Image 1 (cartoon, rainbow, N blue to C red):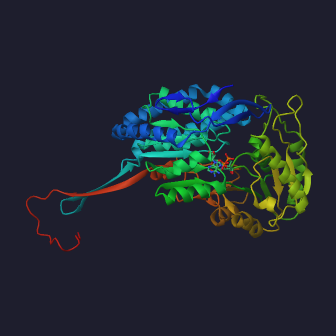
Image 2: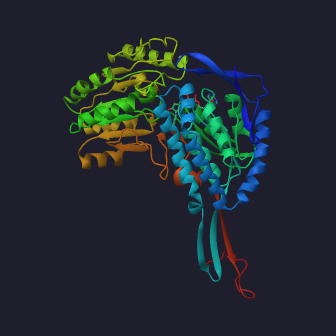
Length: 497
Ligand code: NAD
């Protein structure tokens, strides 16, 4: 059976630890490969080679760096099909969705191609007598990205696209559940002409995450994953003097106002709640119908829509969603549905016993729908991260506004309404980082930036866009003067101009 090692010094290398983890095919439940868990010594070697590459890369002129990124973007696009199938085979999402995963990452590479313009810095001519001031955005050095299983293409590209374009070297530590696509993305960078050692992939688990947080040469850590681990990584990395941006879990609400276009809202919520089997940090697992009769009107259209959904293997072009990533995760989703019922929710659609004929060992979960969910329930407070939609009924706009605002997570939220005034007020007041107005999954485009609030993100900097550029660079400000002869300033008084 194939064992995936690491990508170091421009090539794939076997892992030396002898410690591996299984990679499953979620469609069949079978182990299809293994992945090596790196040791600290393996990380050290990768960081040393990255540090060497970074010095040269930082001195390479920006347009030459951009040319490598342009070539990389084209190569990733040329490999789109292979990447999408590879991604689906380890993650379980349907192939069309895997293409979207790769494409949203390519969007950030596209933005990164234009970084020379954004990184130009600032210049003031004549800030004082014959004095000019200019500020540069210098790269940090070697940085690291630690990524989750659910977007194995997009999230690595968010991180290394921005890190590399700004002049850094990057060590990627992908999820051990689906490492093949991140490994291939790193390999393609070398094939596109990326310098040896500039972008490397080290596979591993907690041991290597800890080593990254503690490594003296690594100057910044970007993390995306669940909230407890995000908080842990943030604390450990910053305690070691590093910059850190650590994105965590989510529980996004979709508010349906009484005047919403219900057909459109149902279509949008169906995809946002159940697409990718609910394994998206921008999924909409909570729907909040507002006012009398709105929940009933929603259910009337939602129930047949759920009934018509097709759950299938990820290679089935007709399937709306595929299996979840692991048996452990499948069991945790089903346990949450059981717990919600115990907590008093009404189970309207039960997906727990779903089994796909011919794929009985696959990690499939049917769609569940829970009504009369209330804010005190643990299953409302917690992230379930599966194809489970919870209905929390609200009497008024103010009640609806409170729910996402007071929730521990604050990643995304959506409001469905035809009233611009209500939408505007909601967007202004809601305590959530990314807001959609009649947009169910408001993942910002690459030239804006991505980031939630509260327990959905630790650290001040968002991912990609100008926020990403700032995260991966430090400002140096130079004040220079070229006086003719001596000046008569007192050396003892702070200069004022
Ligand atoms: P996870 O937290 O289990 O893993 C994320 C990374 O942390 C992986 O690389 C993993 O190897 C590493 N890790 C796991 N356990 C660790 C430990 N004890 N100590 C140190 N490192 C450890 O997350 P996941 O299950 O891969 O991904 C799903 C989670 O990610 C969900 O909570 C989801 O909401 C979240 N997510 C958030 C965003 C966002 O931008 N806010 C985006 C995607 C996913």
